[in-house]
Structure formats: structure tokens, C-alpha cells
Length: 193
Image (tube, rainbow, N blue to C red; front, side):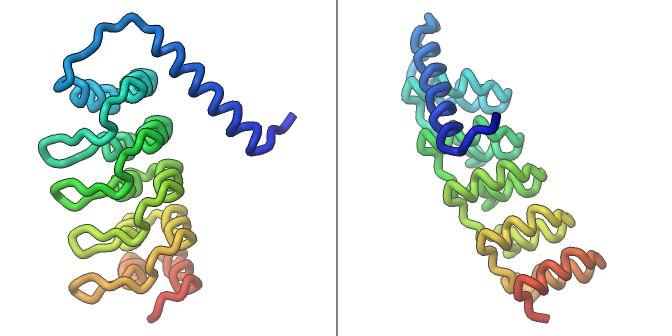
């Protein structure tokens, strides 16, 4: 029997509430305030979604960062953990935050090839036209040859004609790599020659 989307969302919400209730009954000792962020970052890095949920329901800040400015959401996105990404977003994590190198969660997810995480981040409002070191997200994806992610970014409104400081575009990258599929996709999306 197939379930409609509303029923699924209702049931998912119920499961989350049930998990929150179960975690609230845990008898774990309360961590000192300064250790909450470290505990959350460790749980995210270890892909421990139940512990992430537990910490977030205790009110832990969903935006802790490393010394390099990498956020918990960036770590989860790079790991490809869609459940933790969604938990952090629901708790208010900054979907467009940047680390010291200019990376955002959606760049991390795209470069790691995590299509479902890219989709979740875009649905949460991630900037599809973000750039890092003068190269757009679309250019990065085209450069890696990822046709599916490029298609998703274009559908989400990526600027197909963005040019880097040296004048290159995503179409130039596709042609330089002799990737005919990406070249055709970009031309159909309106890339200028």
C-alpha cells in the first residue's frame, strides 16, 4: 500500500517526537555548557544521528564550528548524512554559512557527490549560485563531471552563464573535458557559446 506525502510527513513527525520523548527520558548526565558544542561536533562526525537528536533537543546550538570555521552542517553534508543534515536544519543550522576557505554546506555535499544531501540543502534555501575561489558551484560540479548534480543545480536556478575571474564558464569546462552530455545539458539550459 502506497502512502501519500502528507501521511508520510505526519508519520515522520510522529517518529521524531517519539524519539525526542525517548531521549528526554535518558539518564545521561548533563554536560557542562562549553562541552555541548564539542559533543555535537563529535556526534555529527561519527554519524550518530540519535545523539545529534538528543543534543539538539537539549537546546545545543546547531551552529558550532571548528577552528577553520567548518560547521556541524558542513561536516554532515560532506559525510552525506541526510538525516543529520535535516536534524541540524530543523534546529536552525545556517544553510548558507561559510568556512574560512569559503566553502558552504552545499559545496561540501556537491564535491563529495551526495545528491540527496544537495537536494535537502537546496530545499532548505541553500544558495545555488554560491561561488568559492571565483568558481561557481555549477562550475565545480561540471568540472567533476557530475551530470545528475549539474542537472539538479540548473533546475534549482543555477546561473548557467556565470564566468570566473579568468572568463571561464561551466560550458567552457565541459568542452575542455570533452564531456558532451554536460555540454548539451548546459546549452539546453541557455549557456551562451
